Amino acid sequence: MAQAPPPTDVFLADLTKQDGRLAVGKPENISNSPGYDNQPFFTPDGAALLFASARGPVISACGSPQTDIYRYDVKSRSVAQVTGTPECEYSPTVTPDGGLSVIRVEADGTQRLWRFTADGKDPSLVLTDIKPVGYHAWLDKTMLALFVLGPPATLQVADTTTGKGEIVATNIGQSILRMPNGGASFVQQSGTGAERTLTVTQLTVTNGKPVTKALTTAVPGATQAHLAWTPDGTLLMAHEGALHAWRSGAAAWERIADLNGLGLRNVTRLAVSPKGDRIAIVAVPQ
Image (tube, rainbow, N blue to C red; front, top):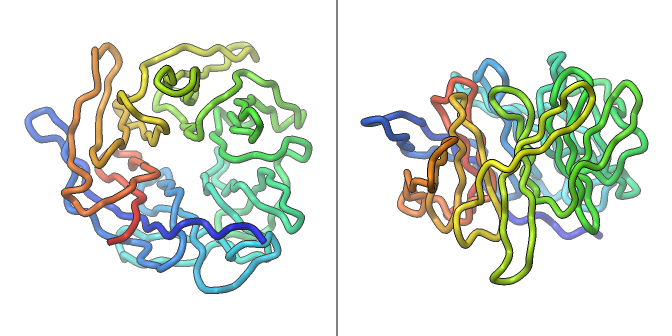
């Protein structure tokens, strides 16, 4: 049986600018469930937040607690279930055509990219032959950036019209994010021990050819990068109880919020709303 994911909750807070600096408001626990709640993703209109959640003691066909996709409505402050299948769904993402793409752990343990309608119906495989997929980001209507588990983990660019993928980088971190002005970012890992570095790298596809460009190293001392982009191109990263910000051209990261002071411990995921006015933070509940 697969090991149960750790208990985490999704918190939502206002994200504002004060004297030109970003500030995080008081977080509210919006998932409020004793099990696993993670991988938040804002809908394009910012009115809702999708997340993966394991609720109840049900053991699914994938051999771990049943994980489905849920939707939090910001205005009504209510949670509704979106998918309800025997398999496990993770990493909810709104597709370019308004559907829902997820990483699905199938009954035999296979992890592949699937698509549902926006209301969680009519599941269909997006990429049949690329597996095991861990994370994904849509580059356009047909192209995807994928984290494919290893060893080593690889970054692949896949085309849904052909079903084929191309390896662009190896030994990458978990964070693959759509960037505000197109393309995606990923984390290139290199070295080991004290020499280990994490480099946030940009991926673009021009005339069908993937191109990568190093942007910045992660916050010093980090062994994993938990990142999010704001609409204006600011990169956010959680590390050791604090939230840090970086902008293109900056010499270093700026510490902008005390996450521990806000009651948020062991932050593992971040997401920023399309208008940049809210931030979702995944943390271990008190």
